[in-house]
Image (cartoon, rainbow, N blue to C red):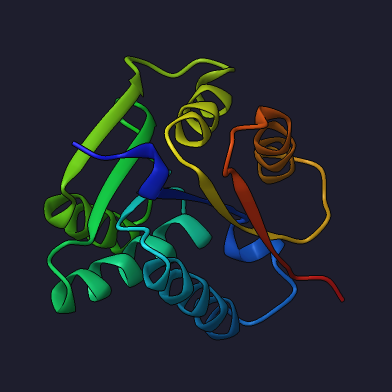
Length: 164
């Protein structure tokens, strides 16, 4: 369905871990997505976690309205990933999922490693990672480190470092 050479994925923190307003992060994400589109990236993978992943997916879907060649893939760590979300978050989540071009469920059920497996899958199926990273340990940092170790030919990792 998609070519790894023209596929980007997202990693980033949940809103409560960022020390910056969501609108600023969304503006930075939009600029990076526009830049990626301008150099030929047309498929974007979102891990669908609240915060950066969901914001990036929404921006990609906005871009898709103007450019039907843009595609969104939602990579879910496990079946039932939506269960602990608020009603508003679930509405947003399902709206994105309905408009996505493809949904990949990485693990059939929750396990301690399902998020790491999802993140590795996203990196392995991309040649660009757009990361919103505040320097803290955790899944975003682990994903960036994995991406940097991959050493693919044209692999890039763009860090939108959000530190104060």
